[in-house]
Image (cartoon, rainbow, N blue to C red; front, side):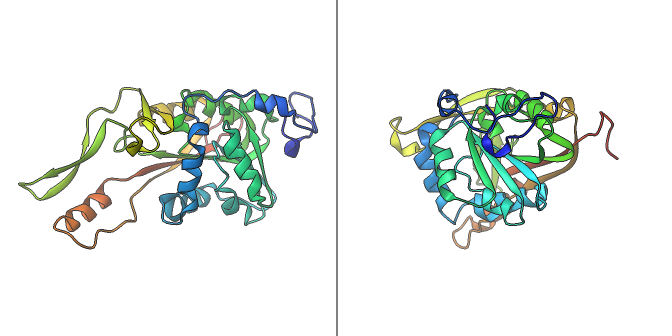
Length: 287
């Protein structure tokens, strides 16, 4: 069923709907990477002002998406809808999609004008939205929690208009690989360095949202892929990569014997990778 917010004649499929069947939404099965089991922990984190989402990720993603008044955008793996105010403040509209009913409910409770939310599997987006329905889409730290991000990207190519933007934000696939990367300290050089144990191998990692819970807290999963995986999926989906950004931490160490080395390391090793791709027109490359 198509969400009521975008109910109109499907230009390619020739169908229309003006309501959402609740049973259809409730039937969605939460995959491994879903934050449904960790929805309270996740929302509590996002409610704080002292996190990277508010200081770095949401402003940066909005800048790259460049939303325009009256246009419609898609937030893939939207969580509790925290991005919505950043996009709608310019008069744009946004549809948030997430497989977690609890997080979608929180998004709806925000009542942000111009925003709507829908419980659904990102891999099935083309089945529920008209072709070329959106002027752009954003996926913030969500594709890395999906077991088949390639299928999601290919599906987005169907619902984004020619010339539309796709913004992907990832925990940096080189320097922030769960269980395969971490900080190290070289006493001889007085240097803090980043250790990477593996990179090219795709990897499924079981994660505790509260590491101190010793296995009793909520669990989710991350699916590591090398950067080439995402670039190849974008190309296959008819997207042209136009900008790449690597975002560093905005935290600063002001005291301690390692403060200088810690700050230098933050400036050298980015936390996040941001990709901006544009949907090609009629299969032709964009100059």
